[in-house]
Amino acid sequence: MKGKRVVATVIAALLLILAGCSAVPDQLQATIKDLPNQIENSRKAVDDAEKAYGEQIKDPKYDFTRSYTPEQMRTTRFATARTNLDEAKAVFEGQVKPLEKDFKIEQLTTLETQVNRVRDLIKTAETNAKEPLHWAGVVIYVRDNTSQALRDTEDSVMHLNSAYESLKAEADKAKTDFPHQLAKINEKLAPFKALATEANAALNSAKTEAKNASPNFAVVAEGCDKATNNTGAFDEGSSALSDALKGLYVRETHTLIDIRVDSMLSLGRTSWNEAVDGGEVDFEFPGIPVEPEVADYFAQVPADTTLATYNSSWGGDFTLKLNNVDQARWDALKLDPGQAWPQSGGHNSSEIWMDELEDTYCHKLKVFKNGKPDASGRPTSDLDDACVKYNTQAEINNGIYWEESDELLSEAIGIDIYSKSYGDFPEQASEAATPPGIGYVNDPTTGEWRTDSTGHSFWYFYGQYRFFNDIIAGPYPYYYRSQYDTWSRNYRYSGKPYYMPDANGTPRFGGKSPQAQSRFPNSNYTKQRLGDATVRNSGPVSRSGGPGGGGK
Image (cartoon, rainbow, N blue to C red; front, side, top):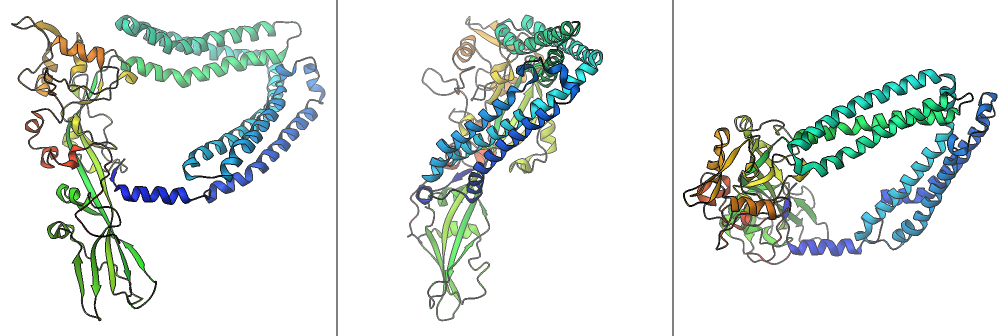
């Protein structure tokens, strides 16, 4: 993702333009136009499916199903399909058509949502209409192959039971190791327990019915189908829970150790022939990479502001005239004003104007997993990531890598922007600014609480985790119990950043802390000037005003 420093004037102008648009996009309009046909065609398909079903069960081999209920043979699905189509028509008439008639660009997403709702209802109707015919074949198969169907279902349920016992054993161990997660583990395990319980009940129902002198094979088929489907659902979802349980034993932190902002300036040119009305030609120059100082300067210029003119008088040489633009900043662009000049039309005048300034935010992270640098799964050739070019294999091997972000996290320099503590599920990890390494505190495998000479309790890291003392830095490279308790109680699961302010409100960590610049003397973060707006602001930036000059 990229942040754009686009001036307020162009945003406002764009909104005005869009607000004036009353036409639904062509492709969406074509889809809407065809929806009534799709609904009616689906109604015919439901009728045809019901007719085909009626013809099929006239076959004497289906005589045994005559006493079965519509629910058992799933013929109620025809009525359900028609209800689906009635709802689709109601949504079309009540939502889609009014939105299309009085279309406003800000309602585009709402319109698309309602169109997709209609299409989904049509698909659901078609699926329901096909089910009775399919199910009749299943019932015939179960009647003719009852023993095999039951054996296959038993095998499926045995697999499910074994898999559930393994998953339950993992969960039981986690509950013992992390008693504070008891309720959450039970909550996560409950759906899988239900799948196993229901599958066994369905199998027993099928086996019991099959023992009857005159079995209802629809009931047998339903039991087999339910048990088999539950096994599939269990297999599909259980690996995620197993991974989550294993994740409880993982400690992981991502420490932000550097930031760079890559800025790309876009300019445009409009040229014309002074002696001819009309015939103007617009040209967009290729994007120009610019240094922070130049970026900050042009970020103040509103879009469409004329920066310079490039004209020829009486057939003479072209001359460039700047429009209240600093010469040094302009020279830094190394722009050829006559690039791709029109070859026809005798153009002899032009204006070069501001388009936009686009920022790419690159963050350099140090990743620790269980106290060791983690290089697994880190990007090395992700072409969609504009920051991947700054990665080196040597740094990746040490768990250090650059990644692109849609938000500038300058205030989080030097601290963890991702912290998952031992005993936390991945979804409980903090993605807010967190003091570096504090997620490893109060973990008996990483250290212990000790008391200093003043009687205050602090966390002492064991051998392989002692490097956290260097990361913490400062005159007291450790965490006091009171500091940890404040973070744990008030910030750990809140999603709020915590820079550990002192009694005066001065943050101990982050971009506004006193030692931030001294801790990163050779970083791009420092080189790009800590005080500059380029680094100081977070998120996409918008600026108006400028160094002068009139509009195009």
